[in-house]
Length: 497
Ligand SMILES: [Zn+2]
Image (cartoon, rainbow, N blue to C red; front, side, top):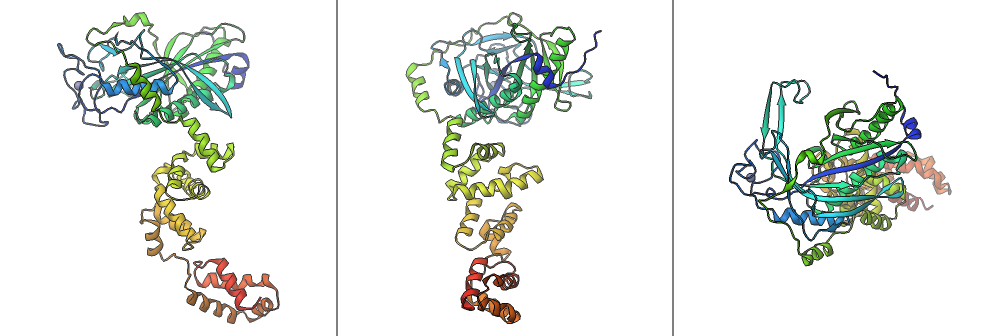
């Protein structure tokens, strides 16, 4: 056995050029399944959302879901694809216990959408990722392996199957190989999946949640020496977060480089990404298309989308997330760096909604990227779960009306996040409103002057800076709830300075 010396990522990239490719599966959010009327709700009791069609019982006949076809065409259009005027479903034959029919109804050589592209931004530069195809198929059921240490079938004492997911419409989006990304390959992969997720979310056809499996990603990687032919690729599955997409590409580049450096060859295979170790492990050897014995599905009529319908769908597409972001950045007056921070924090939509609720762009960004982002970081929670854009806008309104100082507003926000009510309710319950009652303020100022006669004399004599002591005394007497600027004006007016 050859020993394989590990390489650093930098060494790997110095010696080899990566080519990446991504296959993404998106579960559509249709009300019913792809070929039957069963509901698609996530998390229902196992095997309660099934019928003869999605269980593949003999004699049952599928009927294609129009909403799923429409959603797939819209995804294709958003990815700049050509929509086929003629398209067919095909049977992909393989045996697996979570697939009751022993074949998956998918599409093979006649997919619904072909030849598109998606531009993604990586470190300020645009990278065009070409899309080979977007096709429609059905999801499989889910198996649960019990009794083993790993949750995998090996070592399990029993396995359970839940067919609720079987037959849920699934869109597969396949890129062409992406060469030339060099050391940025992991970032390009991550940026692509992120952008794809945002595009699909904008279309409203799926909730695209990686953690729930409604967006799933397989990552293909191969390496070649500069100037030589592309190498053998591996396909890594189980990549369940954006961060994992990046890590999987990086670790596969390092692994393959070490194998090639030792003089070995890369085996074409499916690998599994491990969240724990951050590396990939071999799975089954990769099937080729011929293994699946594809043939046109005889139980379904071909799809021939009407050109006028497709044109209508195209005209009604929403603005792309990238252009939308650019427009917001201009409207908010942010630098590239500041916009990137907002994006990284996942705060774009929150800030947008806060502005829509009446706050200025600066104020909206200040709260979400300041107090709230800090708190989300500290507690490891989602920014959006802390409070709502409406509450933040209401808080800022109290500041604008002079009822809260910035400092008091931060305290009020704490109460809002703790679930004590709206900003106005927290302000009232905790007694945090700025003391604007001139009577109360005047009394506090009189006391401060009486207690500090020497300071008062200095101010009367023109030493305005000395007023700080008096302002401090008043702020203390009002528990910080007076507006310092108003206090200063009142004191100076009182002492004739
Ligand atoms: Zn069904």
